[in-house]
Amino acid sequence: MKKNLSRRNLLQLGTGVISAGVAVGVSSYLATPEPAIAQNNITPDAALKALLDGNDRFAKQKRRYKNQGSARLQEVAKGQKPFASILGCADSRVPAEIVFDQGLGDLFVCRVAGNLATPEEIGSLEYGSLVLGSKVIMILGHERCGAVDATVKGEEVPGKIGSLLAAIKPAVEKSQGQPGDKLENAVKANVLVQIETLKSSPVLAELIAANKLKIVGGYYDLDTGKVSLVS
Image (cartoon, rainbow, N blue to C red):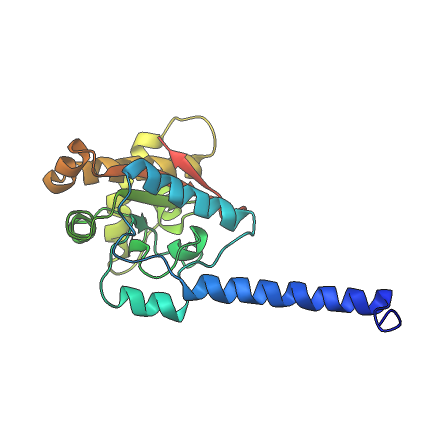
C-alpha cells in the first residue's frame, strides 16, 4: 500500500477529490434556486445592496451565475417576484442581468436609448413595483452614451431618433457649466431628470411614501464594469 500511495499518486488523488467537490458544489447550487415567491420579501435598502453586491462581483470577475439553471427556469415559470427594476439604456454593452450578476426572475428590466422615463416605461415600472413587488428602481446611465453624446453635440439625426435627443436635451442644458467631463456630466444629469420624472408618478410616489420602494440613479463605467450611485 505504501508503494502505491506515492507522492505523485497522492497529488493526483487530491486533485481528483477537489475537482469532484467543486463540480458537486456548482451543480448543487444551480439545482437549488432561490424561491421565486420569496425573492422580493426584503426592504428597499436590502434590494439596493443586493444589486450593488452583484455588480461588485461582476466588476471583480467573481460572478456566481446564480439562478440561471433549469431548476430556476421551472421555478419562475410559475410566477415572478423580481426584487429590483432597472430602467437602462438600450446600449448592447450594458445588459442588466450580467452586470448585476443576477438570473431568471431577479430583475424587471426596461431598456430604451438614453434610459428615458417615457409614459410606456413609467407604466411598465409601475407594474413592476405595484403588482410584482419590486423594491428598488435604478435608472442606469452609462459612460460614453451615444444618445446623450449626440444631444450634447447637437447632431442632425434621421427618423424618430430625434425624439430621443429632444427628450434628453433638458438634462444636457442643466449640466452646462459644470466642471469636469461634459458628456459624463450630461449622462448623470439625465439620470437625475429621469428620477424626478419617475417620482412624479402617483403610483410610485405612494409606494415611496410607504417605504415600499426606493428610486436611485446609477452610472455604469464601460471600462471597469463598475456601477456608482448618482445623486
